[in-house]
Image (tube, rainbow, N blue to C red):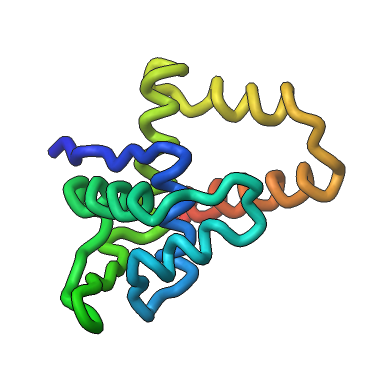
Length: 135
């Protein structure tokens, strides 16, 4: 069974980070815009955030419910982990022909990972190997 992937743009991800951070409480467009604009040199317009939330709703990533007054409240329909898995899977398919090993080699060999990070990766790999033996 082939599941459709959830692929988000940088702005959609920025909005989703705010939606996830607010959980379990939903966000109105105004609240999302206020959170997004903290620390931004060029603030996003309310209408831009509203349009992006509508797009996220069409993608099935958020749901909207009636809120106070005429406002709609938005809440995530997918987890950060689901989106991460989907987008990493798409990256692996597009750049590495569906093979995970070249991605890992690129990350480990091409990045300047410190000893502590490499040790954590080694432990993760060892745990996966042990879990595989138990199956």
